[in-house]
Length: 338
Image (cartoon, rainbow, N blue to C red; front, side, top):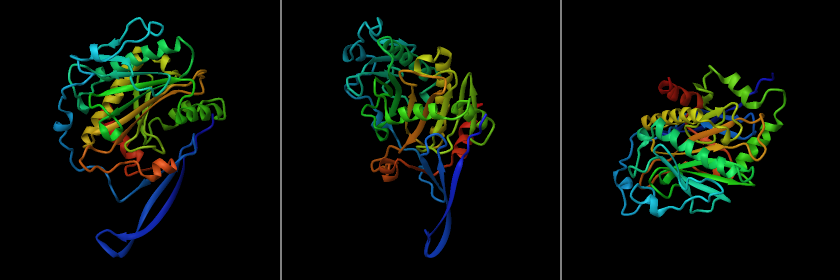
């Protein structure tokens, strides 16, 4: 077994003091290298960008005259799947419903609604059951699509406008085609190239378990924060033994639902309001060198003139810059995980 090397570059910046520009102070900066991809992330200190208070979402989340995902509209406002994919028409698991996506993001795509009973569910209301039901429904759709032919699949979510969501009613989306996404292909390719008899993901879990970035296990789901985050307040869930979305069992979905709900509760405690998550399938020919990965990151808060958390660093340099260390974030989630 070969251990993973976690590389960090410690930099000291000399900058004017905020309260006294004539005084020059030294501020430490950490640049971390992702062991698998080689991408770098900057963890800044001394400045916190997190909100001190949580905004009032009442006006933004009020039910509009028309919402296609609410119970009184979903049967007439959404379509049904082709019988070659599923004979269910619309896929329902518990409170969750998955329907065809009207936006052509990929050759096959779907939209999944956590619950149609109410127009909006705040972070504490995204319960383990609601999230787990949604994942089960997405797995059912993905399984149907893969019955046509093997392909790249991902399941993803935006939540509120700062995350890129155009609809307030909480929902997720799936994408399935022969191309996949840049990050998805990179993760699978780098996993295949990882040297040694042990997969990168098995080595990562073995090495991180019990450490500063370790959060815990739920069933076979391993939960931790990444050494070099790609976004703010990032949390990972890795499912050893599952190489694609179609490998997830109902028990896995329930466990992932509990994990994700716990992260959402933590975000709420930090006065956060918006997030993205993504689950990356292993591609048309998944192997045991890759384990299914789910990432969750927070996004900027909903404010009239909010500061975007995506700057030139992230968008043009593919390098994240965060103000809370993965170790601190792991501690925050760990408090609620037990």
